Every structure is written in C-alpha cells, then in structure tokens.
Image 1 (cartoon, one colour):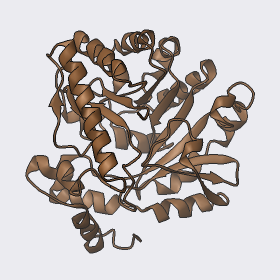
Image 2: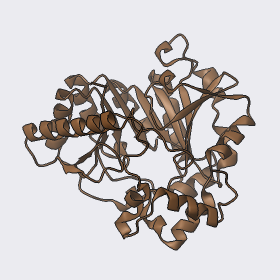
Image 3: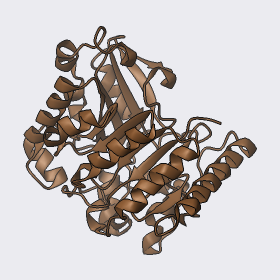
Image 4: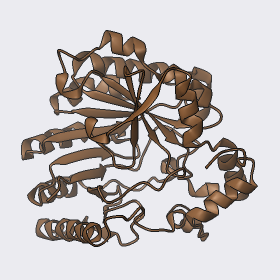
Length: 356
C-alpha cells in the first residue's frame, strides 16, 4: 500500500480575514480532544504515517502542539502544518519539540499595506519574524504559498528568497532537504469562497485571475526556468509542478484552471474541522467520524482508504475526483458550475486576455 497521509483540519477558526477565503465565516465548535486522539490512533493503525495539520488556522488552536506531541509518541514519521504564520514565533519552541518537519506559510505579499488589505490585519512583520525564528531554531523545510492575483503578480520576484538561501544554506546542516530551506510556491487564485458565486464575487475573481503562463513569464524575468520532477521535493504534492531558476532556486506552481492535475498519485485522507472524513476536496460522500467509538473510527478510515485505492486502480488516468469541480465550490448557494463554465466565465469577462 502507498504511504497515506492524514490531512487533519483541527479547527475552522482563524484570526485572519483573507478576502479570497471562507474560513472566517465558519465558526463551528472544534471536535473534542478525545475524538482528535482517537482519530490519530485509528489512522496510524491503518497504515497512515504522515500528518498535515490544517484549519482554519491550526495554530489558533492553543493545544495543537500537545496533539502533535501525541502523534509523535504514536509513531507518526512526519508532521507538517499549513499556517498564516501569525503564531509561529510564539509557538516556535513547542513546534520544534513536537517534531515538526515541514511548514507551509501562506503569504501573498511583501507590502505591508497590501498585506493588511488582503488578510484584514496589520501583521506582515510578525509573520516574517515567525519564519525567521523557525529557520533559526529548526531544520524544517519552509514552503511559502503565495496566492497569485493580478493585484500582486508583479511581486513574484520579491518572493525569490536569495537572501534566505545565503543565510540558511542547508547543504551541510540539512542535506536531506537538498540545498534550500525555503521553497516558494505560486498558487493560481481559486474561488474557494461561496460568496464569489454572486455577481460581485464573480467579477472579483475574473478581475484577479491569472494563468500558469502569466506566472512563468514573471519567473522568466529572473532567469532560465526549467521543470524538475516532483519526486525531488520533500512533501511532494501531485497537483504541484516544480521548477528551477538558473539551477539555483526551486519554486512551485499550482495552476488548477490551467491544467487538469492528476489525482491518481494522491493518497490524502482528509478530516475536516467538522469531523467529516473524505478522500478528496471534491468528494461528496463524506462520513462523520466524531462522536463514535475508536473501533468505528478505525473502520471508517479503513473503508475510506479502500475506496480511494479502488478508484485509483480502476481509473489510473482520472484527472479530477469529480468533473463538476465548481459544484463543490458554489453548490452551497444552489449554483452548479462545472469547470468548462469557469473557463467560459473567464473568456467572456475581464480576464479574457489570459491565455489558457
């Protein structure tokens, strides 16, 4: 069996108010400590060896490092986290003790006023200090996730961290991660907020939409860009493409609407903050795992893994778990939009100058 990893949304709460995200509208009660521990136990007994903690903002949950230490005690081989970076400096020592191996930091701009406009609070310096602290006291690989929009695409060159590579070159101290301590990943703006299904929201998305070509054109202003195998990157993601710039700096690009990314090599088991288990963001058949016995949790996870393995075996070339990708994003407000409708929306809107 392939190495499965658990993508664990431990809370839906977040201290940021990012304009492209809907998590700040989700204030559901977090699952119990008992459920969290039993899910960790059930997953590892089913062969899951890695955890990626998400939210909301996972570090907003004050006890998260306690659960990370518990996971380490259970025998999980790798733990990573996606965070907005606000609490990194404060939590740095606890994260180090928990055995964290990789951190994804969401950071869309290096301009403090633009940062405040995007996320709702003035905290850029705090985030950068948190990144510095983790680089200083750990051997973690840090991936910076920049959501690229027309408003910030010209800042791409500001995110190529030459000064960090010089300061934290990891050839000797951290060879298992290769040469770099930081990899910047440029993410195509994706309409994940159901509010973007109304006219104003659609206009916002169309106005800000960019393509993979747009991203690569900006990277080519820095140097020669060549694609490299994903397997060279720790924490490989089947939906990401990686490139080298002048064979010195590694960057990633995720452009969901510019290509149909392959799902066949994905082995993620997802648990949402509401306690729903699924094998894909676009999986409609979610199963509630909270408020059940440990044995029931084991069976739920086992069945989810078997379901996904069956899908992969029977359709190795599958590109999306569901063709109606937009239905998942906009279905909550009663509007079903498939991926072709998204393309048509862009062709007819103010994003029609984009190439796809």
